[in-house]
Each structure stands twice: as C-alpha cells, then as structure tokens.
Length: 346
Image 1 (cartoon, rainbow, N blue to C red):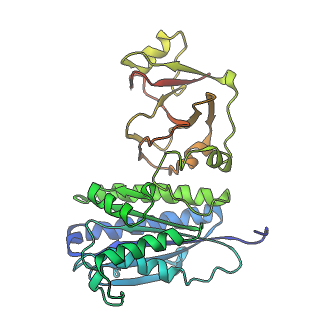
Image 2: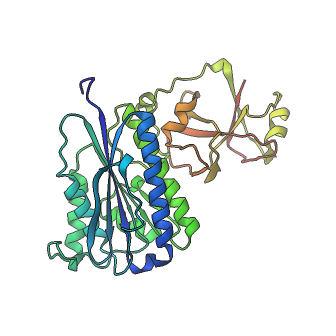
Image 3: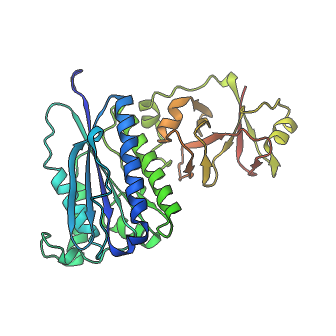
C-alpha cells in the first residue's frame, strides 16, 4: 500500500427484526446508535474512514442504510421495525454478496460484519429474492461463501445459545467469530453491544498495524494472541529485572500472598492470571506472558491487542498453548486461584 492510500472500513450491522425481538426493539436501536457513535469517534481518533451499512431481517431482508459515512449516520429509530420469522441465512448471504459489489479502488479497504440474532434460522428458504433453496443448500451456500472470502473480510455472529453457536459453526462461521449473548433481557443486549464494541476496537487497532481481517474477533485464544499479533500490536517485552512471577499455592488474598512470598505490596503492582470470565475496568492494565520463555509484554498496546475499549467489559480466557493473560488488580483482598501464577511488577 503506498503511503498516501487511506484506511477505509466498511462496517455492517445485520439485525434480527423477527417478532421475538419486539420486547428488545427500543434497546436494539439504542445499542446500534451507540455503536455507530463509537465508530464515528474512533474513526476520527485513528484517522480511518468508516462507512456503515445496516440490514434488518425477518421474513425478508432489507438494506436500510448502505455504505454511508459514519459521521453522517441517522438514528435507526425510524428504520428498525419488528415482525415476522427469522431469515438468518438469507440475510447473511445478501449482506455479504451486496457488500462485495462495493468498489475497492484507491485505499486499503476492509469489511467487518456483525450479525445479531435471538433465534434459529426458520425462513430463508422462502425469503423473497433468495434463490429457492432447501435449508441444507442454504447452509452449504453460506459455508462456501465464508470459505472463499478474501483476507480483508471479517464476518461475526452473535447467537442466543449453544445450539445457535453449533449451527453457526456448521454454516462455516469461524468458531472464534461466534459469541453467545443473553437474548432474554435488555441487560443482555447491552452486554452484546459491549462485545461488538470490543471486537470493533480490536479490528480498528489491528488495521493501523496492517491486519486486514480476523477469524478470531471474540477470542483471547491462540488465533488472537500469538507471536504475529503481539508484534503487529507493537508490544515489546519488559526487562526481566522489572517483574517477578510468583506461583500461587493456596487460596489467599492478593496482598497477603505477595507479603507471604517475601515481596512488598503496593496498589496496582500485582497482576492475577485470567482463569475465569471476569469484568475488567477501563483503567486496568493487561500483561501477556509467553509460557515457554516467561517473557512478559505489557503497556497500553496489550489492551488494544485484546480489543478492550475504554469501558468495563467482560473478558474470558480462551485456550492458548503459548500465552497467558494477566489482569492488574487494584484490590488488596482479591482471592487468588491456586495453581495459577501472580505477576509482580517491581
């Protein structure tokens, strides 16, 4: 890419508008509008051009906004109406096929799509405009399309349960691009909005490092945290004289264990190993440990590597053979998990 070509992001929201979304419909508009405002802010801060497309689907799939400058987006209030069944596969196909017709001249273009649904596919095979296909043929068509997408395409989906996740993976969605959200409450939808925001942050920061697409937007596992992504995020290892790794041998509060291990405790110096799903506040630092070498990478880029926005978010540890995530603790009595390690910054 020559120096004067700019980053152009094409971000699409593909939103379920079937009847079952009725009780959440106002919240859908609010969350989508927040996401668009967030995109507008980050686009200006990172100097990236962002264009937004919105599809809504029930019995039919409708594009209500197409590739519009994020700084000129209207609210979705007038555009999101619920009622009907769930043509999920038809919406996925139509959104990607139509976006693929977008010109990609003069610039580094990248496509990021989030599909949000609260239920299973049940209407695509008779969706107007979709070629008449059996449900099985539709699944195969989506899988084929995802498999052949270029490396500057990222397609992610939020589903309501494990069964939805299984179906999405069968349709060819990369498993780390499938997230489960609680479709029973406005709180669940709020959290889904946060998940989308984190994934978008990871995507936009990755763009500045030359990463064009991702098959691990919802992951802290090996696809998201590896030698290449660490290097791309600009992380450098801390000097080994700046930290200690302390094994945790029993249930203990963090300050108590630091002192018992012969070290001085001061607020913020201790990082616990991420071993279960946790809420992580915007001011908390992150460190990444390479298991083989005990090298530690930290700094603001470590948050960006995981796509953590400037807000409290839920972070879960995904399987990763090579790297471990540590989170800064500012509490003196956080309970440590035995058989994990504690990272002390000197």
